[in-house]
Structure formats: structure tokens, C-alpha cells
Length: 67
Image (cartoon, rainbow, N blue to C red; front, side, top):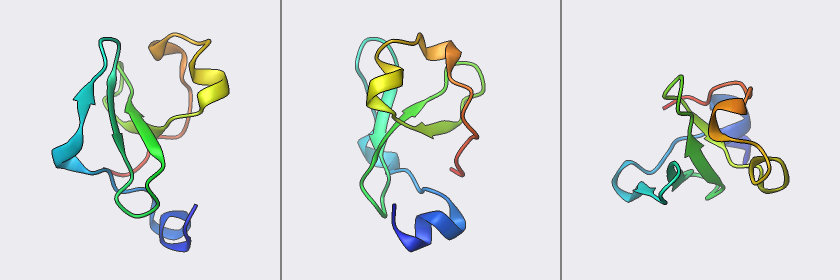
């Protein structure tokens, strides 16, 4: 994670979001880490490959990232 993302939060790329059939995805404009949109809160969260592949989209309890 970049210093700017650590200090101010991630900034999603608005024009490059896509739906993969399960959830909306994009990446952080600053550090290019993958992000997914939480189905319940509507906030964008960092995608954690090991945990997110096993958990349904509504089971994420991460702190929401700034939009």
C-alpha cells in the first residue's frame, strides 16, 4: 500500500468498474490494488483474495474505504 493510501485511504478508478456476475470490481487509482463494492453498505473495500473467494459478498466486515 502506498503512503498516500495509508494516510488518506484508497481512491477507486470510477470509469473502470465492472460487474463480474457476483459483485462490482475496480482498482485503486493510487496503488492499483483490486477493490470490490460491498453489496450491503455500498462502500468500496480492498479485495482480499484468500478470504474473499471463500466468503459471500455480504460477509465482508472490513472498514469501508473512502470513495
